[in-house]
Structures are given as C-alpha cells and as structure tokens.
Image 1 (cartoon, rainbow, N blue to C red):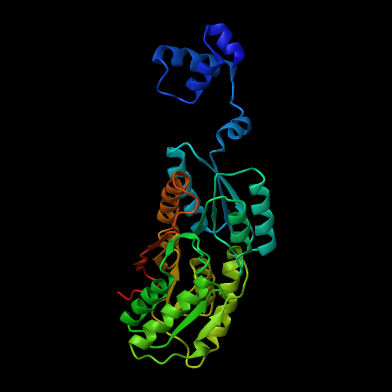
Image 2 (cartoon, rainbow, N blue to C red):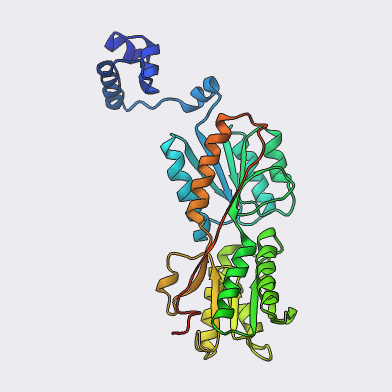
Length: 334
C-alpha cells in the first residue's frame, strides 16, 4: 500500500479507502489505485484488517453431510445472499459425528468468524453453548433445539409428515408404513405428522408399520432404505403406502421394492422428503415434500445481516417455512 501511495502521489489512507470502496474518494483517483492494485496482483491482508475492524467478513456453516443435496442447497442459498453483502462462507461437515462437529466449531472459533450457521447432529446443546460463550452470533438451520434461545430457520416438520401422509390417503392407501428418521427433533416431528394424519382419517396406527432407519449419516441413506424395505416386505398385510424420512432413503426403498417385483405405485405408493433435483428423472419419478432448502439458506443469510447490525443480546427469532408436496408417478395413480 505504501508503494502504491508513493507511486501515485496519494496517502496510504487514500489507498485504503479506495480498496474499501469508500464514497469519499474521487472516481479518477479510485480507478488509478485499483488499476495499480490489479497490475501488482495485490491482495489485502484480511486477517490484519479484521484485527482493526473487528470483522472477518466470514460466516461458518457446519452441516452433518455435504453429500446430501438438502444441505448443498442450503449452502448455495446462504452463500449467494451473503456474497451480495461482501460476506463469504466457510463450509464444514461433521459427518454426523457429534465430536467432530465440536472440533470443527472450535477450529472455526479460533479464526474469529463473524457468525455461525449450524445444522447440529448433537442431541445436546454443547455446540450451541460453546458458540454463545464465545459471543459469536448463531443461526440454527434445519434442526432446532427448543428452549436453547437460538435463532432458527427451518421448515415445519410436523407438516412435512402430515402432507405426505395425507397425500397417500388421498390416493386411496389404507395401510401406510413409515420409514422414520433418527431420534432427533426432525425425525420425531415427521413421525408425529404421519400419526396425526392417520388419526385425522380414523386409520388405525400400528407400531409394526413404523420402521427405524437408524442413526447413520445421510450419505448411506440408500442402504438404510433397502434394509428398511426388507422389513416392510415381510409385513402382513403388506402396506400399500410408504412415507420415507428423506429422498435418499426413499430411493433405496424403491429400488428394493422394484427388485421384489412390486409395481409402484400400483402395489406400493411411495413419498420421500427433500425434493431432490433428480427426483423427477428416476426410473419411477419420486413424489416428495419440498423442504424449501434454498430458501432456508437465503432467509438465514438475511437473519445474519440483521444479527450483525443489532445487539448480540437481541431476542432470538424463528422462521418456519411451509413445506410443499410435489406429486410424481411414485405415488400418483393416473
């Protein structure tokens, strides 16, 4: 910066203001400085700048899985909106390992990020507590911890379970099974929605028709779906409708059902959750509940901007988005 200032006959402060796009610099002067910066391939030391400004312009995102399209879409929505405000995203995966999640958060805290966005895989609030103790703003996405006093952006997961089950009932299904998710707030809420819809239509609930997919990460969902379908195929009487916790589980379950000679949806109607971008291109296009993943990321970014402008002690906010059922051939009899 000193070299550029000396060459152009301006002060170092003027160079600094031009780099920060301050309005109190003449356009001609700014253009000369930026042209020289470009030719020298100069990059400001953001670490040094953060020590002065107290801001790193970095936001950390910690999710359980980077393979799952749901979290990838959240990251895309979050990143695109943050970039508009000249903030940038650092992404990390916990691989659905609670200890790894804690380690990743500790590492990011050491880099003095301006805000955290976390989809926690933990059953306790240790991650939340550590971030709050460090005084860093936090937004939870997808997975909420009621009573933790945290900002949250997600979808109504009870409604997710209800929408899917109501759709299967509307298609004439009488024996609806559910491959449920792990023992988390999301898994519990979707199972609750499934049961609510059955009760509303006076369809008897049977615990035999609820098959657990286990605590594994989303990356092996297809394997879990295939295993769960083995149990469903053995049920007497066999279900005629199936709600799956997410689309990867639904994909594995559907593959196994087709291998067993079932016709979908004539013998078994299937609905997933997530509305993956490839759901319409499968051998049997998959009906799914859209969880608004891209919008979750975008709304989280807007919340971050508000948090960074307000006092850290401001009252936590929750944004709950409405899911939408996307009906395709896997559940819809023509």
